[in-house]
Length: 158
Image (cartoon, rainbow, N blue to C red; front, top):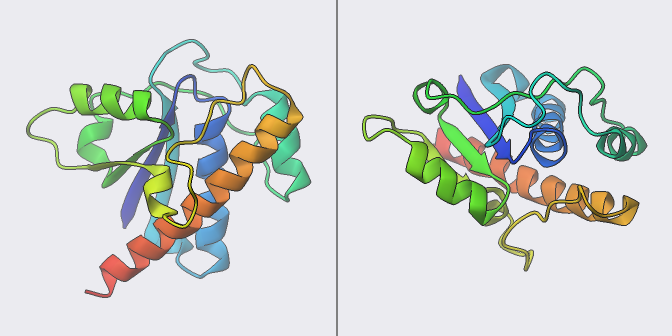
């Protein structure tokens, strides 16, 4: 089983969106049973809270359900348990690379690396924006998640 952890700041917008998108994509392609997906935040601002209401609404508009999500923070154990730790922006990537113990072996990457046809290099934080910012983030997350799933499936072919 491949274990993937998506990471953003507070784990209430971008990373739970990526978690639910990849989980549903994996199910729809038949790879769901071989992939375990979670999400976490680099900060503990929202631990235990549900996803942001605007993220929940944007997800529902696209057929995803974020209502059961509860935020959590990245832990040291995550670096041992997950094969991929996927950051939503460069700030998260820097934090994760600093926190990663030398003995850990997860592949720490930016999500948008898996969507090379898209000019965006990171998923901007929609938290201080409006509904269109959530829609834009969702578009980027869906593109990156499709590319990540393809990369994982192709890595398994080798």
